[in-house]
Length: 87
Image (cartoon, rainbow, N blue to C red; front, side, top):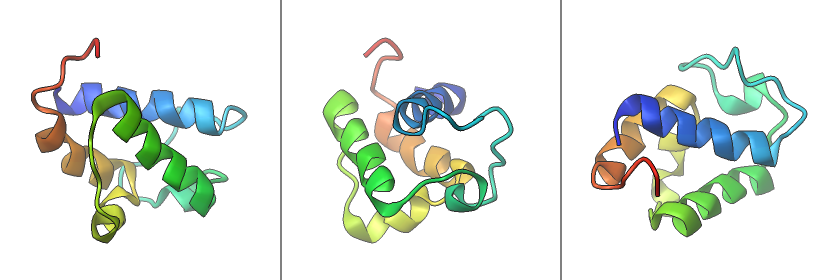
């Protein structure tokens, strides 16, 4: 997957976790929690969805990379390179 496909995966997951939030204006460098109502359980749901759907393991020590859209995309692109966009 390329960066745009990974971004769309994250937006799809976020739209299921926080369905009432407008995700269209998410900024890459601003932490998710400053832009949308996202608590620690919601964050873990994101990690679990990535594991369930794409078999991506994110160690707890790497969670800081997932703080922002830009950071999450940069972190996930190499992990999801071999994943088909239709997975």
